[in-house]
Length: 145
Image (cartoon, rainbow, N blue to C red; front, side, top):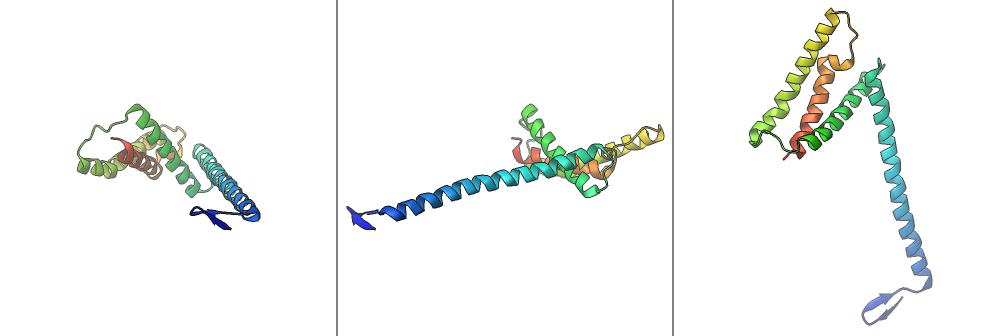
């Protein structure tokens, strides 16, 4: 390496190695990001699919309902970008109270469906409805202005 006018100038092999390293880092990073996103999508799609069927693993179904809550929260932001609750303390309380209310309402609907002999889905149970509503409430709390 030689120095001209206060700037360092790399010679031959150093430029080639730096260029190669830069390409490997950039493309390697892109590939890693793609693989991570595709893996997350694979897990998400399987867990969402199990929310509609009788899943063997309740953890996967819970993850699916959390993802559905995330999607519902995002969609709700498109439709209602600002929260009707302007007080920050009341918004925090809303994040706690609303999922319990939604879970309770869905549990009541589930019990009514059970009494009528109708088929139930997991969302008809308190826990799954709570997870869905909690994630949706958290999304709205964070991004609704």
